[in-house]
Image (cartoon, rainbow, N blue to C red; front, side):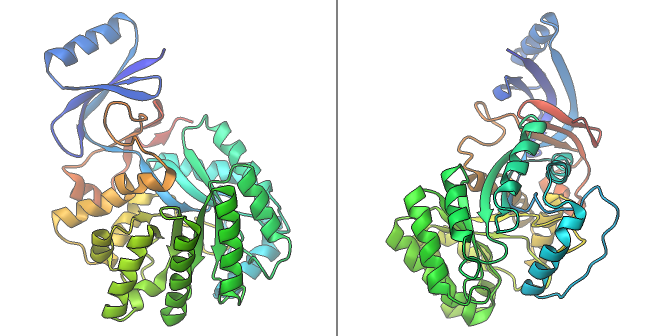
Length: 405
């Protein structure tokens, strides 16, 4: 049994406590300065177990990145200039033509991205991993190897993602089926209308696999306006028919914020009834999501970094706090309550996206703790200070902002 004491930290900016961490799990929480805390400290020192001084820093649970692409970054390599056409199809074509030159996908590339996640306090992620006729399932194998290389410090769920289309690439459905059979948590889809030009066909095929393999579905949907809304309706209908309530997610979903108020309200209610969730990277040129209505209707929202420094865009550094702040600015959040909500999206509300039922700063939860020098949670959001200490699964992986793994 391994144990250490993380002393004098302020969960969510509250009163200081000491956390007892045993075998990677928070096993006890006592008020700093109490007799129970003093007893714990004495026991740890007597057993020559580590006591880490939290210095009264604010503590948050590990961040949850609900939408990432850890398999396709050139992070750690020399600068790669942006090229190709700016459309979705243009980005796909450019990536397919250039990825081999930069060794994408690779174990080293996935490891580099996951290390940046840890540096910024992310300890769990749902990642879309490209599955296509060129790489097969190799990208998934690479990600698993990268996770193992980091000792499981970052917990990773895999979405087998058909970045180059589904029906238009014969053989991709078979690869998705195989990925689901071999442990992918979800299978993905991509713009059924504008990429495959057969929304009914793509969705029917994906839902058939998901229902048979008992996995989830996570569909990238960039189509705007009425075309996007039409595909939401198809997804809602199939979710109900297939009995996949609570297992379907829409990524991006820009059209939702563009609909007329009455239609948007009806759509949000239907999404909530079907248990369909939403993940966003809160891009600055998109329409704000109706997040208040979504919260009321029970439509779960998760935040993600999307790709970072890849052949789609040179932007991104793996810091989910930056995404939370961008969400807040896009949606005009100002009050302490609303600013705190943006942090909750990056933490507590993200946990279901990686199937973490016991999550947070509480006994029994995996010991994922992020310490920051901040007055309160809104202060964390607006300043995004460095992560002073990060504990991932009971392992100290960041000290004074520097990676230890």
